[in-house]
Length: 106
Image (cartoon, rainbow, N blue to C red; front, side):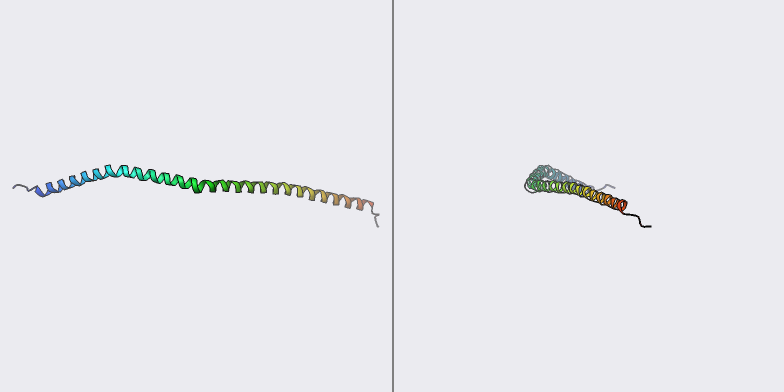
């Protein structure tokens, strides 16, 4: 009994041809993919330079202004605190003097 191998041999041949076509497609698609990647990278760099960099610079300026305002507010708060403590100390000393000068009623 002899086996007829024409059908399996034909299928193996088709698979081999498809493998060769895949290799050719990969060899031709790889450089195209590299070109697309480079163009996309350049596009992203241009967008970053045109949009993101000015936004970051303006954000830095705003943050610097906020820092200055916060610093000024802190300084003014410290001055106001010192002023209020001085006022309270003066008031307390006046009360003590008035209490010491007032005659005791017994």
